[in-house]
Length: 349
Ligand code: SP5
Ligand code: ZN
Image 1: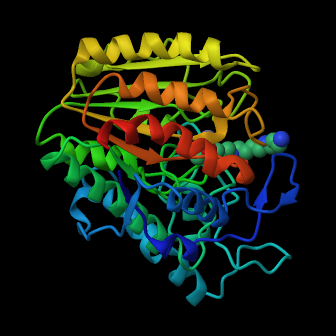
Image 2: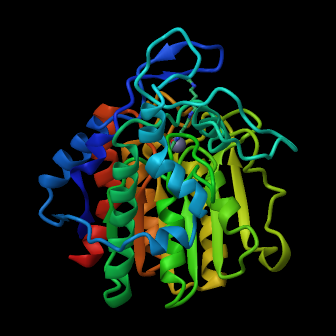
């Protein structure tokens, strides 16, 4: 299996994040997540690790607004030039908003510090000096995978970091800045329809939002019921698309403690929907935070469960791009990712 990976993710390493209530904790979404996965993959004879190509900005601007991408690109430097002040008493080296635009507060502000709030919906998407470069390389990993898929149906794994599925057309959130699965899907659309199956523990709100009105990209997400967990504001079962896209989005919400058997049962409904849609390509937004020991999740999925989930998805026999999303149980991340991928690896030899 081709694994697309870039070391550029290391440039994105924010020193901390802020929890609801104000506690400052070490950033969950760390570079060592990649080291663990890479280490596990390097022991597999079916894995070939290669760097991404450069697809330029065009396929990214086909999904994200130009002003948002410009903010990601220039925001940190512009803010540094102004002295890096956010009005707090702590001296921080990251650009993080503190004023957010809910209903009807829609005016794009001039102030860079205010734009940091305008362009995100939570406190876990700070911008550091290398954030844009890292997110861009991550997007190019997904695009490289998508482009391989156009000429060869063998499964490809885009080992993306930072992740992407919480990022919308013009906003960051949940450690995500650019939506790699959406960018890859939009890129593949010229060759045929795409289904995106999101199995991260958290609802893929960005992906849902980006393709909500599209009948050409079927988006399905299995996740923790947002009435109990992040991202809270989207991901409910009654959200099924809008306009021409009605019927082309589906959310499958799961209770705390969901185990392998219960998960596989719900997964089967999602796979049935994909079979009926019969897409040209499948993109799997893969979050390993469904694991029983994940610090951000509350499901009970085991390592053999990852393999079983992979087996079921691979049985669709679709040209598949697997895109890395979340997963924070560092120690288990390598073996769980390999367990899922091996279901596809066996197929491609
Ligand atoms: C890509 C991805 O998985 N993003 C997840 C972002 C979740 N951010 C919310 C963090 C809430 C932390 N709650 C602390 C629970 C500690 N047990
Ligand atoms: Zn997640």
